[in-house]
Amino acid sequence: MSHTNPLQLTLAYVVATAGLQEVVFAISSGQARELFSEAAGVGLEAVTSCARAPWADQYTADRRVPARVRVAHGLSVACACCGAAANDGPGACFDEYQAYCSQECLIKHDEHIQVREVALLEAREVALALWPEARVVKVDELGGRYRVHFMFGSPERHAFWFADDDQVQVAPVDIEAWADFNRRMRLSRQI
Image (cartoon, rainbow, N blue to C red; front, side):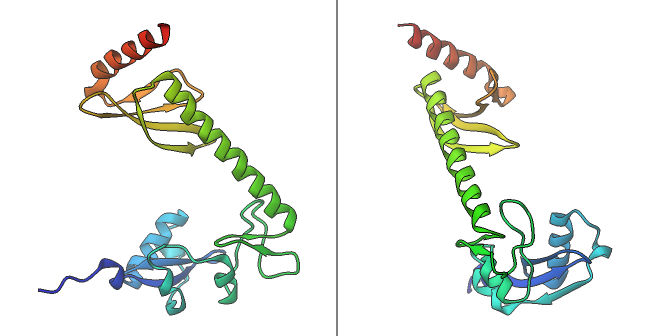
């Protein structure tokens, strides 16, 4: 019995509405239309076209097509910083995956990324200072807030904490284990 890699079944499609075009990776045009309408927040009836895009099949594993490639195939792209059109005009700049309408937007976007990375690192460090026995598994940004996911206790349990909040979120079944762990961590900080 031969096993087929699911990525081998996935193909690229360009799906569009009256004002939006996107490359979607799916196993059929019907699925591509559904995925697009869900992601774009529009009904299926708003989809005006769905065509195979064999030129984008090579990006199936990443599920993203570089902006420069999108532009080369006639798709519009928006500036990753300000949202303005960033097609291959005189001021357009590209990095590996994104486009920028100007050099200024590229610089501003890079600065924002650097500030974000510093804030994520700081959130991680604060969490480890508060709970030194925790194992941080992920730090992300959600709605402008920095969230630290970590494991605590034995057996390990999952919790997350927003850096701007005093409350740690744990599953209801883990509330007692969290209270014990947190009490131990507070006592260790007082020594």
